[in-house]
Image 1 (spheres, one colour):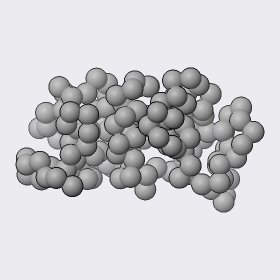
Image 2 (image 1 turned 60 degrees about the vertical axis):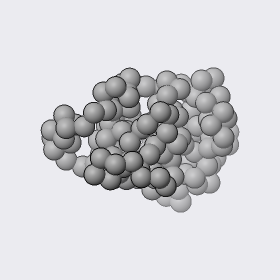
Image 3 (image 1 turned 180 degrees about the vertical axis):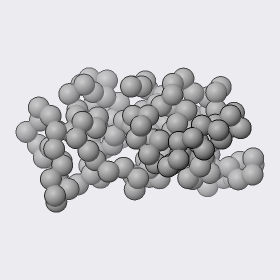
Image 4 (image 1 turned 90 degrees about the horizontal axis):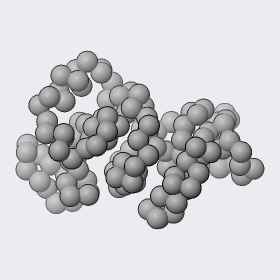
Length: 144
């Protein structure tokens, strides 16, 4: 699993788009949502302990080894695994074929970053440029 600062920044900066797609599940790795610095501190200090232990029928989330129960998923931000990103875009085989048409390879350092870039392009028409998501339509950057 990619826990690099770049990948966490990619998730954090795209979170307003990605939040609706995330359904918290047992064993998801998460941090408390806050500033980027707070999120990075959670991941870098104890990411191996920030694992969802339980999600009840009301959406309350209990984290492994923590006594606090989060009332709503908006209080957390996940670090997506590759399989979660693939589920967001559906048919994996079509996605793999389409990956060859896009120039992600210079901007990413892991398969998770590659799939996240593909999710953002496919669902939100955004590409990762110089450390930020930029809207792109038909190959042209669009200011948002």
